[in-house]
Length: 384
Picture 1 (cartoon, one colour):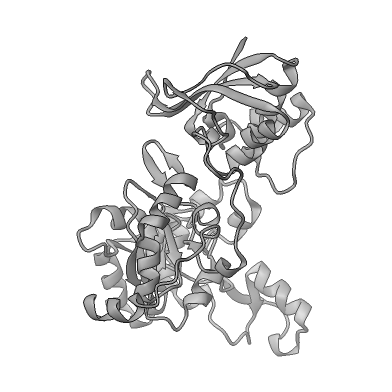
Picture 2 (tube, helix red, strand yellow):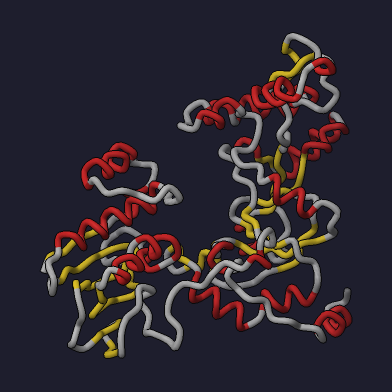
């Protein structure tokens, strides 16, 4: 038996040299849809599997995400499909050292296993790639077309300098009322988990996807579609460009230039460096979908509790918020139901002991329950 250890930190951005060399070391073809993190897990596990002969066994020590979400799909699921089984496992345990980690212990066998299965020190009938006892139905759930564009992850800033205190935001509005067009309450996961009223504690500068300035040569009204697209992408448009640009808000742009640009100059992704005045990921599809709505459902991406709530539109949602463009009490009943909570507990990943809600795994695969009565009764009881 061989013992292998996986450290999730190797997958992240801290050690890109090691990460980028892994495909060459293992010479393993990868799926185009896999991220580098998922490719690392896949390469490692499949490499371990290739080293085993029929009837051979190995032990793995990994963070508990090995049995969750995409990491499971590209790792343990594929090994199970190749005929591997899991005779013994510990689904999640605290790392005994100083690091604050939850780890899994997994014993793998190439081929069938005729002995006893042991999960979390208890005898069981078998062990799935989820590191759970087999149920009546096996496999991964499919994503439902009916749930497309009904759940979103919020905006990715890549630069804390966009964020302001409430006092700073109100001062900027008082100095120039036009600044209100680009200043928004900023709701994040900590607000949802910690504040009694779950209201935004800070504000954020949001210059949309606007160009930076109007210093380009030529004329906008004479440019063709291709030239206009190139101008917007470069951030530099002609002087007759009719829509807003970032320099129209000099006080806000000065803050972003001072607090955000030094950070963006150091990031690896070219588009983030070049468009330093914009959010890294604006999530335009989210905000265009909720335009015209009065409220939406939202929950913290990482939380110890499953607790969606209604939130007003007209604010920026951080990447640590999961936003559902749903506004009915029956939608709330559906998301808050025991059925959905059980589903989330089964298919979400985790961060330490906290639940990490991933829309693609937790919501898009969930068949909504029809609450015809709740649509009327809930409105009265909840004070609509």
